[in-house]
Length: 136
Image 1 (cartoon, rainbow, N blue to C red):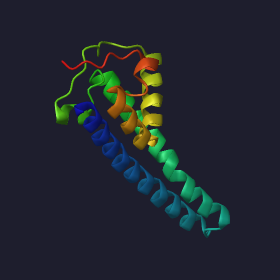
Image 2 (image 1 turned 180 degrees about the horizontal axis):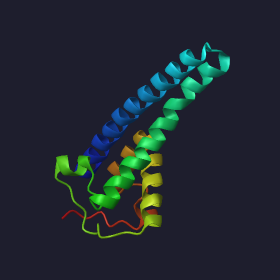
Image 3 (image 1 turned 90 degrees about the vertical axis):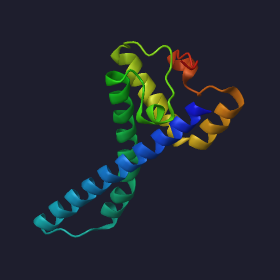
């Protein structure tokens, strides 16, 4: 269950990072629109709504890739709950990207991911990424 708690903490961290990135993007975009003398129109409103999911996906992938590369998969959530996996050796870039995308999809569907973990004690992407989820 520590792994599920770590995933929840990572979800919240990446969500906060995406909110910060979203606010920066919207503020910058609004300033540029004011400088150019343009007002918000219908298309601008749609873009504002679509930017948050984009910011969440990008920040989650970046968060996962940084922790996979630099800390060998031991994210902040895993460090907080004291969970470390056995097989966290050096992985190639292809594996890191596949893992980051799989984690992002799992975090978007977190309720389903949590239910899957409760019943199987594995994350949905473990088999895809070849992760052995034993605790050290």
